[in-house]
Length: 314
Image 1 (cartoon, rainbow, N blue to C red):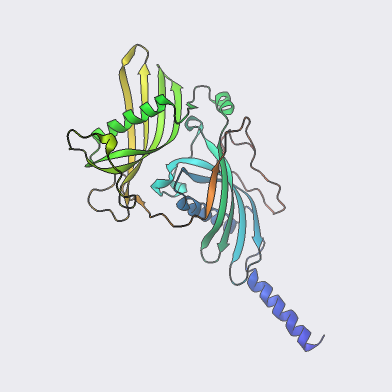
Image 2: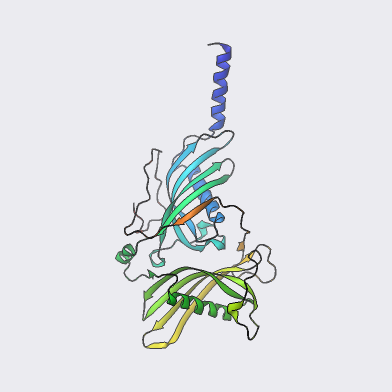
């Protein structure tokens, strides 16, 4: 072999070594797990609607050649919804996963990340859907069942609970409804309705008199407090005139806020980035439970499931 050809072979080998600094990876490798966990943190931080997603299982991983240091990984992961709304900006590991009594939601995400010293999110596409009502009823006949968000009784429950919060909260400003994000119904001693919704601070002071609070204007999104609330409304058959209403809200401070402290200390809202790195598609609930597993030639795939709920199909 001539010296010139030998030199070319050596250069190609060196370039290949630089382009692929990480060995072939599998779904159960510690670095893959760490990458998937950090990638999901980035996905949740990128979103502005819906609930924080939690990692259930790594389904597949593929490493692509990449020039320079680091690696380009394509991950497919199974996810489940938590009880934390994305406006809380909490880490998914600190959030409780929705169980059968919360109308659970499951799905999968295809994620592309660049890995060097840190994990950088390139893109993602997630599809999620509620667990079929038939599955919930079979496992837990007495659990709440999903209701339409625009049902009049759901809007009434939302308004009653928000009125209660505005009356009892220590904040000086009135809060207005942003979005109803969840609704369910359960029969107790009468029909009980449960709602989940987001709220935002308005320009109306609570101590104002003779004010039509429905006409209050939302404060600028970047400087206003926002919140996530859960409420309920129970009507007892023997006492139809009585309204049993409960409400609980977490309020989050914007980054540039001063003055009154958040009811949930430490939670601050970040300003929206200009461009999103991906999307989360909410599909209609299927008639039967579906599996998110895909065929994979990568070793140790899929990885172990972290959420051993009976409503997750193997």
